[in-house]
Structure formats: structure tokens, C-alpha cells
Length: 345
Image: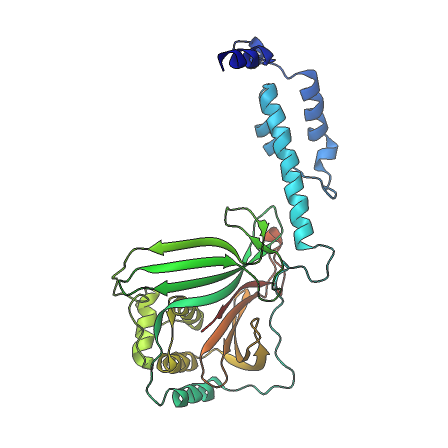
């Protein structure tokens, strides 16, 4: 081993004691490459397969004459070019319906009749009249969420999450990259902070958490009457003032990400939503899991939120947020689905 190490040391073209290893002028080749990048061509829009770094980034990355660092920067730039090109192929692709494409907003059936939310709440009361309760701590939810950055096009990440609680108040959480719209096809995931194409059903995380004995909402069981549930959701949002409709929808998402409701809790939540106002009935939709539901829309600044509810039981099936204002800096366009959750029982 000692002989091999000595051979490697002798093969090193720039030993640590060599004066070229310290600060000094750039070599001819490094200057030529730097001039090419900093010249007018560097400011042109990058074509297919090209990766552009800003002037300041290049100055920081290429500052200093060390040949090894220069080679490393060029390698990183090449890698980034491949990554950007690959991401473009993944998002656009030759197929007309790529597996990782962002979902389109749900469309209301033109021939459907909107059902007022008050009437749906009455149906929920009827469904819960037998007094049975299927309340269970834990959730099973399929979600699509948009990730945005200043230097890459938006990407939509489909994830399925299953949370189960145990008798000792510990719980497990399984997170899987999957998209039921395209079963068996590759899915985009960012488990490591960067978008990667993974197999459908790829396990992102499988964790067990120690017991939790919190008695504050949403950890404590939700009540099954509307008045107390309204106060419960307000406490879950850590506010002393009545919830706005938008805040109520956020609290609903938090509740359903923690609990699987029974008929009585469904009825109480339907009544709270009906009393809040601002949710207008728009008709019938088919959600992303193929279920039929009644849709109610709340228009907020920059976004439209659509609540999807079971037309018979009044249970919340899903919640969709769609952009109504563009944000060119992040590549967000009007009509983009920013997030969507579908709760499964």
C-alpha cells in the first residue's frame, strides 16, 4: 500500500508545495474559457441542452487560479446542464400526457345541478342520525403539490401518505410517490431536495414516531356538534378571532390530515362550512380518484379554492387550490393547480 501511495503522489501534476497551487494569474486555457463565458454569448438565451449561469455566479465560481477548482466548476456546470435538460424532458416529454405533468383543474359537469351547502349539511345530518361514530385518528390522503423556484419551471409532486396511530399513542407515517391518474408510470419525487424520477409506489419515507399525549387540537378528538367544532378549529389555528372562510378551509385540511371523521363529525363539519358563507355551489365534479362529488368554490386573492364533498353523506372528499393570478417570476400561470388533497377512507 505504501508503494502505491508513493506512485500516486509522484503522478500528481500539481503537488501541494507547487507555487501554481497558490493564488496567481489564470492560465491561458482558463482565461479563454472565462472570456467566452463572460462575453456577449453568455447573455444569450440558452438553447436546448444549455445551462446559463449569471455573471455574478460565474465570478464567484471561477474566481481563483486553481486548476482543480476550475475543472470542478466545469463539471458542475455540465451536470447542471444535463439535469435541466432532463427535467425539461420529464415535464414536457414527447407524450401528450406525461406522467409528471401538473393536473388540470377539476371541471364542473355542464349538465349538473348545484346543491346548496345548507341542503348538503341537512343530508349529512340525516346520514349521521343513527348515532354511530367511525371517528379514527390517522389519515390516508393523496396529494398533488406544486414546487416553484426562480430558476426552474414549476413541478408537481404527487404523494400518498398513510398515518396510523397505535394504542400507546405512537404512530407510523408511510409516504409513497404515486399518481393514481397514471398507475404504473414513473413519478416525480423530491425526497432529497431535488426532483428525481422514481418508480410508481417508491417509498419516500417510512417512520415511526414516539407516543404523543397532547390534548390540544388537532391532536385531541374533534367534537361532533357544530358549535364546539367551530371553537375546536379556531383553537387549532391558534387564533382568538372567528375564522374567515379561507382560514376555515385551511383548518379543515389540518383536521383531515390528522383524523378520519365519522358520520357525526362529517355532519358537524358540513354545518360549520355551510354557516361560514362564501362557499358558492357550482355543480358536480369527478375528483382525481374517480369519485363523484358536489363542488363549492371560494374565490380568494390570487387563488380559487374548490371544496369537494360527498353528495350523500356530506363528507369532505377533497380540496383544490388553483391560481387566478400569474407570477412570471416563478413560472406560475393562471389556471395552474397549486395543491390538491383527496382524503381516502
